Amino acid sequence: MTSLRSRVFNNGNSQAVRIPAELRLDTDLVQISRNEQGDLIIHPLRPERGKALLQALEGFDDDFIEALEADRESLTLMQDREDL
Image (cartoon, rainbow, N blue to C red; front, side, top):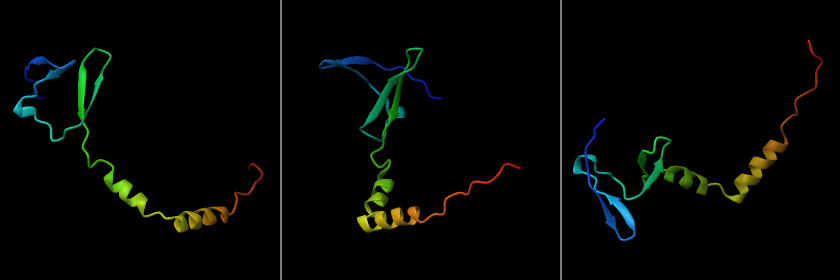
């Protein structure tokens, strides 16, 4: 694990941390959380994350949904049987 010291400074009403070049992020959006020990955790959020799923869901039109629901209704229900 790489560990470097950096500077905290004020940016308007917020605090900011200088991220050294060795730890540069490949995104402009992050999620920041604090764990039970008080450590800040910065998790990069990549803009492409979930894009493939959203594109796949766009292909489901009303006809597809109706066919899916009709297929589900036609399933045979499980039979009740005596215990062995």
